[in-house]
Length: 95
Image (cartoon, rainbow, N blue to C red; front, top):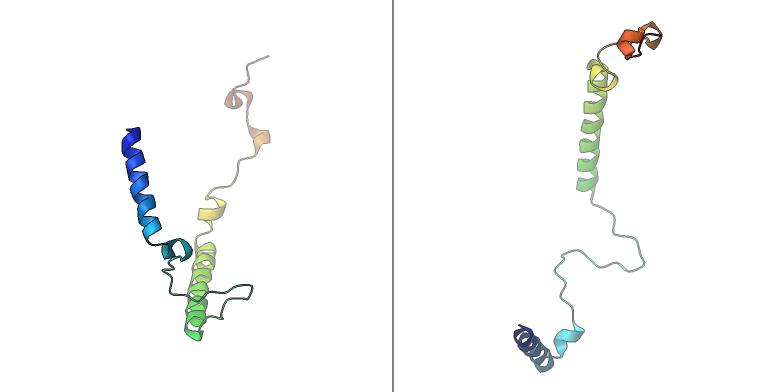
């Protein structure tokens, strides 16, 4: 097993030696511009408008459902008063 790994490593090193340019260049597969120590370019007006529309719809959805169905967030029933619970309900043995 060690010999097979060594042979594969030697073949890879031989390929790298035959083409030394590959050691110095990196492949970039991105389509965006490269910014170094500067801010990114501003988004287009279409992107800003689409973001505003999606954000407005999301806030409308949340606020509408809080207004019309508050039980999903706050619960559907009143919280019981703990001072009215009996010892039997709480599992406390008799004295």
